[in-house]
Image (cartoon, rainbow, N blue to C red; front, side, top):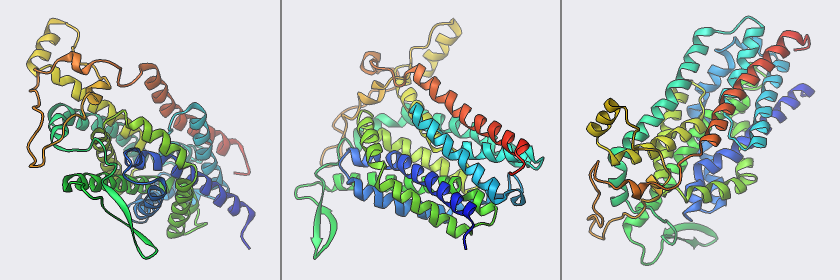
Length: 401
């Protein structure tokens, strides 16, 4: 007979995975759905499959870290595991109320750290390594995308036709089984673009599964209430349920929002963020996909805007104490998307050199509202901090736990 507390733990884990599926599916497949490349149902199916694959392969490393390296596995009693998962679910609720995608990884680590401090069992070197990567990853995401935005993005925009993927692929049937095929009159370069959009979305789903499966089940695995493979299946299944249900609204929101950002820019952001998180998951570091993706967007827009100024001009302005001319603005990216190539692959639009672009062509709406950005950053810091403090108080003063 299954203990009632274990049933509660499984339900809470499923709730966490369900919410992860709802939010991560929009992040991963928003560009693909918004450009009419895949349907919402297909996006949910692909999200489920690749999240399971990411969790089963790379995600076990993160489960190992969170389930027995931050604090010894012996500290994860069943009651303690349920409490940790409760804090993760509470963070999801708070983030939804404020409209900010909180990092479930950071919140889960905060709750586990609170348990470790209360029981005097936290392994500080492991915790220090995790926090160090939390600082390094967003900075790396910003600068990688800033370099791409400054030196590569305009040339990619001129050569890669990714403004719209609609009407390139159509559904055909082999008996009752549907399969995708190239639409009549669609150019092969457009088909390649569609394949690229879907492949990057699947890569993002893989990364989301690798980093987030542990958030739902690591405490239960650490307590040995369930086995790692069972945990991956539970979390992956819950992510899938979320992908097929509440993610449909998220796909509408993210897909429509990201169409304001050129599809090429969105795919660059996804690739950089997913690569960082996949690497961190491989080495067992729980990290935030949302934080890395946000910093990638800011870095790409900032790098694109700096093309109006050469390095020598910027250095001269700094020496003279003048205000910098480059600011991160959405039109630094949204003004693009006019590129593409002819049928023979030649450029149809010349790319101005750095320092020759007109600032008026890039300046209009801010890339990010400072007040909103500040609120997001504050909540990213607050949610794991509150989780850690609440967890400490619970495990320190509640005898039952």
